[in-house]
Image 1 (tube, one colour):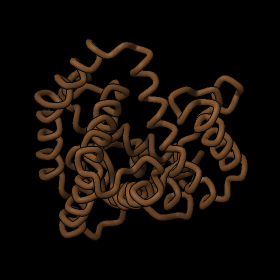
Image 2 (tube, rainbow, N blue to C red):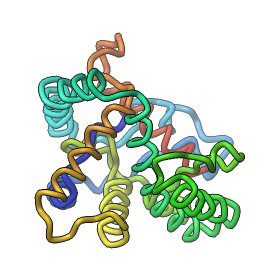
Image 3 (cartoon, one colour):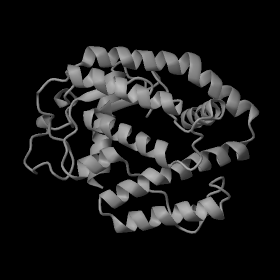
Image 4 (cartoon, helix red, strand yellow):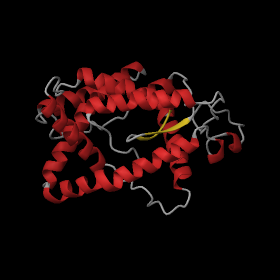
Length: 254
C-alpha cells in the first residue's frame, strides 16, 4: 500500500521535510497498544489497534490532506505513466526491471536482518544477493527463488520495533503514503543506507540519476496493486490506517 517513491535525492529531501513537519505537530499522547506479541493477553480490544479509534492520529486533518494529495498525484501523474509503461514494455522486460530493484533492496533487508540478530534471514538474504547478482546477471533474473531461497522483508522501522520502539502517531507521508513516526525514521535510515551502498548509484551524473530513479518510481508503482478510492469503503482513510498499523505490528512480531 505504499505509494510510489521518489527521485533518489528528492526522496531523501521529502523524508526530511515530512519528518520535520510531523515531529513538530505530534502530540505527547502515548500510542495505543497493538496486536503484536508484547500486548498482554488480557488487554481489551478497545485499547488495541484492533479498534480503529484507538490509533493515535493527532494530526489527522493534515494527514487527510496529504492522503488526498497523494491520491491526486497518483491519478494524474503516476498511473498514466505506469499505463504507458505496461502497454509498450514487454512483460519479460518489466519482470527484469522488478527483479533488478528487488535485488538492490536486499541490501537493506540484509542489514536489518543482521541488526535484528536473525542469522537465517541474514544468510538467505546474502545468498540471494550473491546468486541473483551473478547467475541472475545483475539481478535481472531471480534464480535464488527457484532454488528455494525466498525473499525476506526487513527494514529499519521493523528493527526499531524489534527492540521495543513504539510506533508513535500515525503519519501520511507525501508520495510515500501510510506510515508512523517510527517507520518514517526507519525509511529515512534505509534510504540513506541505499544512497551510500547502492552499487548502481550514479553519484554526480544528474541525467543518469534521474533516469535511474524515474525507473525505480515507475516500477514501484507498477508492482503496487493498491488504487486510491477503490476500496468500496466511504471510510477509506480510516480503513487504510487500520490495516497499515496492524500489518506493521504483525511484521515486527514475525
